[in-house]
Length: 270
Length: 335
Image 1: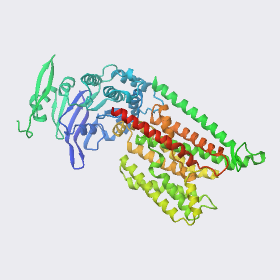
Image 2: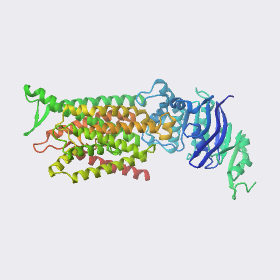
Image 3: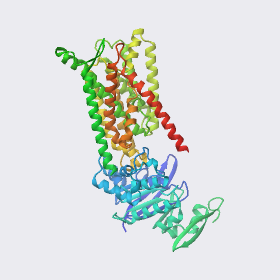
Image 4: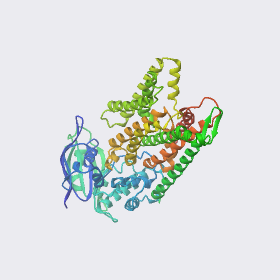
């Protein structure tokens, strides 16, 4: 597997505060990667740097080319980004919202091309939102809206999809649905090409079950990186999240449930 | 397929508004006004060309151009700020233009060669744009730009009051006040040539922002991820609006509410799509201004109503309805 998205000593600073410290990563051309870690660890900042949306030091390259050297449109076609708690400011119908994703391909708001329409219908099908397509986005439930916004990001059909907390605020049904959609997109199922999906997640069970690789971040650094079983070991969960986890297997897949908070200063429980 | 029919609907709406605006313009060319009240026709063959070229044509053209400018810029600003209450006067360009014109009046330069008046207004609008950029600096923050616009509005309004205060005579003060009410009467084709060099680049800048406005529907970060730098979109819309509206105010005085009302009325017809709203708002603004100016000429004899007064009289109740309906939406969201 070749490395496609590579960061070298990437740092993101907001004034004096350093959100991401000297992070060097290599991500493959395809696969579903979870980025986990406690609040304030710098996960969103790292995602924004990867998506080319945060100014940073160090270098990020896509297939050997510096991300900053790509034209804005080419970067937009290469890396799709779904922001945390995305909003839609006008009550467009769901299909028009999804079609906005095609702006990355130079689609003009007035006349989508055949390729645009095909990508939009494909994205609607992937997220099971075809029947919502003609409804106003403001009339949809939170779960339905999340699926439509994900379809918007899928419609870019970028080789890299970066999503920030896609399942926060969703009920269990929609959480499982969205994780399934992301995993299928990474595999390149249903006529798509295999893609790299990087998602910030807080549900450790879903991260361990659906993702092939888990990055654990604390205090601006990626401190664990590897297969879910290794990264999300009970020991790591204790050390980095300061919670005692319940760890089990169900139908051959891992279950990791935060059970009890470990009070005291970080490291005191070691 | 809604995306396809949405596009078709957009062009049908444009065609309909375009035809209506042309019909209104044709009627406006036929409609006159004398001391006895409204007249129809062109006043006989010998006067025909003079009346048409010197009086009716400039007036009709300016109604179309100024109304269109206000509609287009209102739609673009509402898209940029993602707020249906934004309007072209927000950025201080029109109040800057008004101040420039008022100063020309004050120094007694408005009489005789009337070109100094619009020139002063153009200068005022460009200066207020420069001031806007000086105040907002490199800030990409939309709120800073809006606050800078509000500050400029307040400052230029204060200066305008100051000039009125020191007006050399009550007659001069009245003349200034009347000009500020906004009117299309007694304009010539020279005014059209004066406004167009500002309006056309302004329109082009605003239209160049169309896709950026669509992208902004998803927020600034997502717009950037789609390849549309929000700062570029903002620059295009703010500069384009200041130029075009500055040019419009320079020749007609301040005409309010068209830029607020027209985009708002048309938005549901284009599925709330920011870029699809631009052209219909231009045509709708042109139509509304032409109709309002025609209505003025249909009034019974007496002092002619000012266009700015008519649009404000029509617009203010509409604005009130907007506030009430948005309050109802807020209430139903709370429930």
